[in-house]
Length: 171
Image (cartoon, rainbow, N blue to C red; front, top):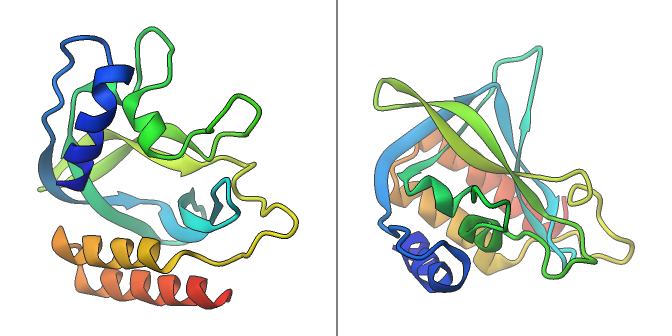
């Protein structure tokens, strides 16, 4: 519901007229060959979620897969999309982007599907001098509660909870 509310709030100003804003949860999805990391930093220097592609070892990221109109993710006119704005792209033209949309192949409901996810940019993976190196408690709480709400695997929920707790104390 939060994603749908955010899309509805941004779409009137940042999506082409008439773009559908319906959000459908398809279910938990696995992204093999990637790992979860709380090593990104937003414009305030606070830690944010990231995923990184890995090689040479078995790893997967789990998340919720939603079906939304593609124009909400990548606009054909090259302008910033609704999800660009929701997912933390720069606040102004002087600040670097925090995330970039990346097309990946996920496993969901016994099917392989192409989907967009947002991955931290190289700039967002560098903590600016003087940044707190900590995550915001409400942010990590949303990650853990959201994982349970969409039914991610229990062992993956435990991994997220542990990583989020470490991010609260600066580990």
